[in-house]
Length: 311
Image (cartoon, rainbow, N blue to C red; front, top):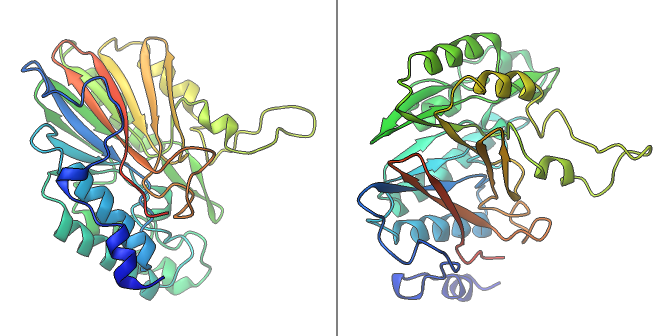
Protein backbone atom coordinates (compact mmCIF):
# COMPACT_ATOMS: atom_id res chain seq x y z
CA UNK A 1 0.00 0.00 0.00
CA UNK A 2 1.19 3.52 -0.77
CA UNK A 3 2.65 5.00 2.44
CA UNK A 4 0.88 8.36 2.07
CA UNK A 5 -2.48 6.68 1.45
CA UNK A 6 -1.86 4.29 4.35
CA UNK A 7 -1.14 7.10 6.78
CA UNK A 8 -4.12 9.11 5.54
CA UNK A 9 -6.43 6.17 6.13
CA UNK A 10 -5.08 5.65 9.63
CA UNK A 11 -4.91 9.29 10.73
CA UNK A 12 -6.52 10.14 14.03
CA UNK A 13 -7.74 13.35 15.54
CA UNK A 14 -9.55 14.11 18.75
CA UNK A 15 -12.55 15.26 16.73
CA UNK A 16 -13.15 11.83 15.21
CA UNK A 17 -12.35 9.50 18.09
CA UNK A 18 -14.33 6.29 17.81
CA UNK A 19 -14.89 5.46 21.45
CA UNK A 20 -17.12 2.42 21.80
CA UNK A 21 -20.55 3.01 23.38
CA UNK A 22 -19.99 3.17 27.12
CA UNK A 23 -21.91 3.63 30.31
CA UNK A 24 -19.46 5.99 31.97
CA UNK A 25 -16.88 7.26 29.45
CA UNK A 26 -19.22 9.94 28.15
CA UNK A 27 -19.10 11.76 31.49
CA UNK A 28 -16.27 12.93 33.71
CA UNK A 29 -15.44 10.65 36.65
CA UNK A 30 -17.14 11.42 39.94
CA UNK A 31 -15.00 13.17 42.57
CA UNK A 32 -14.98 9.89 44.51
CA UNK A 33 -13.57 7.88 41.58
CA UNK A 34 -10.63 7.81 39.18
CA UNK A 35 -9.94 6.11 35.88
CA UNK A 36 -7.03 4.27 34.33
CA UNK A 37 -6.48 2.84 30.86
CA UNK A 38 -5.25 -0.74 30.57
CA UNK A 39 -3.34 -1.28 27.32
CA UNK A 40 -1.89 -4.72 26.82
CA UNK A 41 -0.26 -6.92 24.19
CA UNK A 42 0.89 -4.27 21.77
CA UNK A 43 3.44 -6.68 20.25
CA UNK A 44 5.05 -3.84 18.35
CA UNK A 45 7.70 -4.57 15.74
CA UNK A 46 9.49 -2.55 13.04
CA UNK A 47 6.73 -2.78 10.43
CA UNK A 48 4.45 -0.03 9.17
CA UNK A 49 1.25 -1.71 10.34
CA UNK A 50 2.47 -2.42 13.87
CA UNK A 51 4.07 0.99 14.38
CA UNK A 52 1.08 2.89 13.00
CA UNK A 53 -1.32 0.75 15.05
CA UNK A 54 0.54 1.47 18.27
CA UNK A 55 0.55 5.18 17.42
CA UNK A 56 -3.22 5.15 16.88
CA UNK A 57 -3.86 3.35 20.16
CA UNK A 58 -1.75 5.76 22.23
CA UNK A 59 -3.14 8.84 20.49
CA UNK A 60 -6.62 7.52 21.16
CA UNK A 61 -6.12 6.98 24.88
CA UNK A 62 -4.27 10.29 25.28
CA UNK A 63 -7.29 12.07 23.82
CA UNK A 64 -9.23 10.89 26.89
CA UNK A 65 -7.20 13.21 29.14
CA UNK A 66 -7.82 14.52 31.72
CA UNK A 67 -10.39 11.87 32.68
CA UNK A 68 -7.73 9.11 32.72
CA UNK A 69 -5.13 9.34 35.49
CA UNK A 70 -2.57 6.90 34.11
CA UNK A 71 -1.95 3.96 31.78
CA UNK A 72 -1.24 0.43 32.94
CA UNK A 73 0.77 -1.48 30.34
CA UNK A 74 -0.23 -5.14 30.70
CA UNK A 75 2.87 -6.61 29.06
CA UNK A 76 4.06 -8.10 25.77
CA UNK A 77 5.09 -4.63 24.66
CA UNK A 78 7.22 -5.96 21.80
CA UNK A 79 6.49 -8.75 19.35
CA UNK A 80 8.96 -11.26 20.72
CA UNK A 81 12.28 -11.44 22.53
CA UNK A 82 12.12 -15.12 23.47
CA UNK A 83 13.88 -16.30 20.34
CA UNK A 84 15.29 -13.21 18.66
CA UNK A 85 18.82 -11.92 18.21
CA UNK A 86 20.03 -8.99 20.23
CA UNK A 87 19.86 -6.80 17.13
CA UNK A 88 16.24 -7.73 16.39
CA UNK A 89 15.18 -7.20 19.99
CA UNK A 90 16.84 -3.79 20.07
CA UNK A 91 14.98 -2.75 16.92
CA UNK A 92 11.68 -3.71 18.56
CA UNK A 93 12.47 -1.70 21.68
CA UNK A 94 13.54 1.22 19.51
CA UNK A 95 10.10 1.31 17.87
CA UNK A 96 8.37 0.99 21.25
CA UNK A 97 10.33 3.85 22.78
CA UNK A 98 10.02 6.10 19.74
CA UNK A 99 6.25 5.76 19.55
CA UNK A 100 5.78 6.09 23.30
CA UNK A 101 7.95 9.22 23.45
CA UNK A 102 6.12 10.83 20.55
CA UNK A 103 2.52 9.83 21.29
CA UNK A 104 2.08 9.40 25.04
CA UNK A 105 1.73 12.16 27.62
CA UNK A 106 0.07 10.11 30.36
CA UNK A 107 1.92 8.55 33.32
CA UNK A 108 2.48 4.85 32.63
CA UNK A 109 3.17 1.78 34.76
CA UNK A 110 4.39 -1.52 33.34
CA UNK A 111 3.87 -5.24 33.79
CA UNK A 112 6.21 -7.82 32.22
CA UNK A 113 4.83 -10.12 29.52
CA UNK A 114 6.30 -13.46 28.50
CA UNK A 115 7.37 -12.14 25.08
CA UNK A 116 9.28 -9.31 26.79
CA UNK A 117 11.78 -11.74 28.32
CA UNK A 118 14.91 -12.20 26.23
CA UNK A 119 16.54 -15.44 25.21
CA UNK A 120 14.53 -18.19 26.89
CA UNK A 121 14.21 -20.14 23.64
CA UNK A 122 17.81 -19.58 22.55
CA UNK A 123 20.60 -22.09 23.13
CA UNK A 124 23.62 -19.84 22.63
CA UNK A 125 25.57 -19.77 25.93
CA UNK A 126 26.56 -16.17 25.23
CA UNK A 127 22.91 -15.16 25.43
CA UNK A 128 22.41 -16.91 28.78
CA UNK A 129 25.45 -15.08 30.17
CA UNK A 130 24.51 -11.67 28.80
CA UNK A 131 23.53 -9.09 31.46
CA UNK A 132 20.35 -8.37 29.48
CA UNK A 133 19.21 -12.01 29.51
CA UNK A 134 15.85 -12.98 30.97
CA UNK A 135 13.86 -9.98 32.28
CA UNK A 136 16.76 -7.63 32.85
CA UNK A 137 16.30 -6.01 29.46
CA UNK A 138 12.59 -5.26 29.83
CA UNK A 139 13.05 -3.98 33.40
CA UNK A 140 15.71 -1.61 32.11
CA UNK A 141 13.64 -0.48 29.12
CA UNK A 142 10.59 0.30 31.24
CA UNK A 143 12.64 1.67 34.16
CA UNK A 144 10.70 -0.60 36.49
CA UNK A 145 11.55 -0.86 40.21
CA UNK A 146 11.68 -4.65 39.81
CA UNK A 147 9.96 -7.50 38.05
CA UNK A 148 7.15 -7.25 40.63
CA UNK A 149 6.28 -4.23 42.73
CA UNK A 150 3.49 -2.13 44.26
CA UNK A 151 2.31 1.44 43.98
CA UNK A 152 -0.57 3.42 45.45
CA UNK A 153 -3.03 5.78 43.84
CA UNK A 154 -5.59 7.57 45.96
CA UNK A 155 -7.48 4.98 48.05
CA UNK A 156 -6.13 2.05 46.06
CA UNK A 157 -3.05 -0.16 46.17
CA UNK A 158 -1.88 -1.83 42.96
CA UNK A 159 0.16 -5.03 43.20
CA UNK A 160 1.94 -5.84 39.94
CA UNK A 161 3.03 -9.46 39.56
CA UNK A 162 5.55 -11.21 37.32
CA UNK A 163 3.50 -14.12 36.03
CA UNK A 164 5.64 -15.79 33.33
CA UNK A 165 8.59 -17.97 34.36
CA UNK A 166 11.13 -19.76 32.16
CA UNK A 167 10.35 -23.45 31.75
CA UNK A 168 12.71 -25.73 29.79
CA UNK A 169 13.11 -23.24 26.97
CA UNK A 170 9.50 -22.13 27.11
CA UNK A 171 7.46 -20.51 29.85
CA UNK A 172 4.90 -21.39 32.48
CA UNK A 173 2.32 -19.15 34.15
CA UNK A 174 3.04 -18.94 37.87
CA UNK A 175 4.77 -16.87 40.49
CA UNK A 176 7.96 -18.18 42.05
CA UNK A 177 8.38 -18.89 45.77
CA UNK A 178 10.24 -15.66 46.46
CA UNK A 179 7.49 -13.67 44.80
CA UNK A 180 4.71 -15.59 46.58
CA UNK A 181 6.28 -14.84 49.98
CA UNK A 182 6.54 -11.17 48.96
CA UNK A 183 2.87 -11.17 47.88
CA UNK A 184 1.80 -12.69 51.21
CA UNK A 185 3.68 -9.99 53.07
CA UNK A 186 2.27 -7.18 50.93
CA UNK A 187 -1.27 -8.35 51.57
CA UNK A 188 -0.66 -8.73 55.30
CA UNK A 189 0.71 -5.22 55.71
CA UNK A 190 -2.01 -3.53 53.65
CA UNK A 191 -4.69 -1.89 55.79
CA UNK A 192 -8.08 -3.63 55.46
CA UNK A 193 -9.57 -0.26 54.53
CA UNK A 194 -7.35 0.10 51.47
CA UNK A 195 -8.69 -1.38 48.23
CA UNK A 196 -6.39 -3.67 46.25
CA UNK A 197 -6.06 -4.28 42.51
CA UNK A 198 -3.82 -7.14 41.34
CA UNK A 199 -2.17 -6.88 37.92
CA UNK A 200 -0.62 -9.85 36.09
CA UNK A 201 0.15 -10.38 32.43
CA UNK A 202 -1.26 -13.92 32.39
CA UNK A 203 -4.72 -14.44 33.93
CA UNK A 204 -5.07 -15.94 37.37
CA UNK A 205 -8.72 -16.80 36.67
CA UNK A 206 -10.34 -16.60 33.23
CA UNK A 207 -12.69 -18.33 30.83
CA UNK A 208 -10.81 -17.07 27.76
CA UNK A 209 -7.97 -19.44 28.58
CA UNK A 210 -10.33 -22.37 27.99
CA UNK A 211 -11.52 -21.18 24.58
CA UNK A 212 -8.17 -19.97 23.24
CA UNK A 213 -7.85 -23.18 21.24
CA UNK A 214 -10.52 -24.05 18.68
CA UNK A 215 -10.93 -27.66 19.80
CA UNK A 216 -11.05 -29.67 23.01
CA UNK A 217 -8.76 -32.60 23.67
CA UNK A 218 -9.58 -35.82 21.79
CA UNK A 219 -11.34 -37.22 24.87
CA UNK A 220 -13.46 -34.08 25.27
CA UNK A 221 -11.43 -32.47 28.06
CA UNK A 222 -10.96 -28.73 27.85
CA UNK A 223 -7.48 -27.77 26.69
CA UNK A 224 -5.97 -25.14 28.99
CA UNK A 225 -2.25 -24.70 28.53
CA UNK A 226 0.12 -24.02 31.41
CA UNK A 227 1.14 -21.00 29.36
CA UNK A 228 -2.39 -19.54 29.25
CA UNK A 229 -3.58 -19.68 32.87
CA UNK A 230 -1.73 -19.58 36.18
CA UNK A 231 -0.96 -23.15 37.18
CA UNK A 232 -0.88 -21.91 40.78
CA UNK A 233 -4.33 -20.34 40.51
CA UNK A 234 -5.71 -22.44 43.37
CA UNK A 235 -2.86 -21.39 45.64
CA UNK A 236 -3.18 -17.71 44.76
CA UNK A 237 -6.97 -17.57 44.98
CA UNK A 238 -6.75 -19.49 48.24
CA UNK A 239 -4.50 -16.76 49.59
CA UNK A 240 -6.90 -14.10 48.33
CA UNK A 241 -9.78 -15.57 50.38
CA UNK A 242 -8.31 -14.03 53.54
CA UNK A 243 -8.33 -10.50 52.12
CA UNK A 244 -11.74 -9.01 51.47
CA UNK A 245 -10.18 -5.76 50.26
CA UNK A 246 -8.92 -7.37 47.04
CA UNK A 247 -11.46 -6.00 44.57
CA UNK A 248 -10.18 -7.01 41.15
CA UNK A 249 -7.44 -8.65 39.10
CA UNK A 250 -6.45 -7.32 35.67
CA UNK A 251 -4.63 -9.26 32.95
CA UNK A 252 -3.96 -9.53 29.24
CA UNK A 253 -2.10 -12.26 27.32
CA UNK A 254 -5.12 -14.07 25.81
CA UNK A 255 -6.02 -11.31 23.30
CA UNK A 256 -9.68 -11.84 24.23
CA UNK A 257 -12.00 -10.26 26.79
CA UNK A 258 -13.87 -11.70 29.74
CA UNK A 259 -15.02 -10.80 33.25
CA UNK A 260 -15.23 -13.63 35.77
CA UNK A 261 -16.44 -13.06 39.33
CA UNK A 262 -14.93 -15.68 41.61
CA UNK A 263 -15.32 -15.59 45.39
CA UNK A 264 -16.23 -11.94 45.30
CA UNK A 265 -13.27 -10.79 43.20
CA UNK A 266 -13.69 -9.58 39.61
CA UNK A 267 -11.11 -11.02 37.22
CA UNK A 268 -10.83 -9.03 33.99
CA UNK A 269 -9.03 -10.24 30.86
CA UNK A 270 -8.58 -7.14 28.71
CA UNK A 271 -8.10 -8.01 25.05
CA UNK A 272 -5.10 -6.67 23.15
CA UNK A 273 -3.93 -3.73 21.10
CA UNK A 274 -2.60 -5.94 18.30
CA UNK A 275 -5.59 -8.28 17.96
CA UNK A 276 -4.45 -11.27 15.92
CA UNK A 277 -0.81 -10.14 16.11
CA UNK A 278 -1.53 -7.29 13.68
CA UNK A 279 -3.66 -9.50 11.47
CA UNK A 280 -7.13 -8.20 12.42
CA UNK A 281 -9.57 -9.57 14.98
CA UNK A 282 -8.66 -12.50 17.20
CA UNK A 283 -11.50 -14.95 17.80
CA UNK A 284 -13.95 -12.14 16.92
CA UNK A 285 -12.40 -9.69 19.40
CA UNK A 286 -11.40 -6.33 17.96
CA UNK A 287 -8.06 -4.76 18.86
CA UNK A 288 -8.99 -2.68 21.91
CA UNK A 289 -8.02 -1.42 25.33
CA UNK A 290 -9.88 -1.15 28.63
CA UNK A 291 -10.79 1.87 30.73
CA UNK A 292 -11.42 1.15 34.41
CA UNK A 293 -13.17 3.36 36.91
CA UNK A 294 -12.17 2.74 40.52
CA UNK A 295 -14.43 4.08 43.23
CA UNK A 296 -13.51 5.29 46.69
CA UNK A 297 -15.98 2.69 47.94
CA UNK A 298 -14.10 -0.17 46.24
CA UNK A 299 -16.37 -0.41 43.22
CA UNK A 300 -14.88 -1.26 39.80
CA UNK A 301 -16.31 -0.61 36.34
CA UNK A 302 -14.79 -1.52 32.97
CA UNK A 303 -15.43 -0.38 29.42
CA UNK A 304 -13.63 -1.83 26.41
CA UNK A 305 -12.64 0.78 23.85
CA UNK A 306 -11.93 0.08 20.17
CA UNK A 307 -9.41 2.57 18.87
CA UNK A 308 -9.80 2.01 15.13
CA UNK A 309 -7.14 -0.58 14.30
CA UNK A 310 -5.18 -0.33 11.05
CA UNK A 311 -6.13 -3.87 9.98
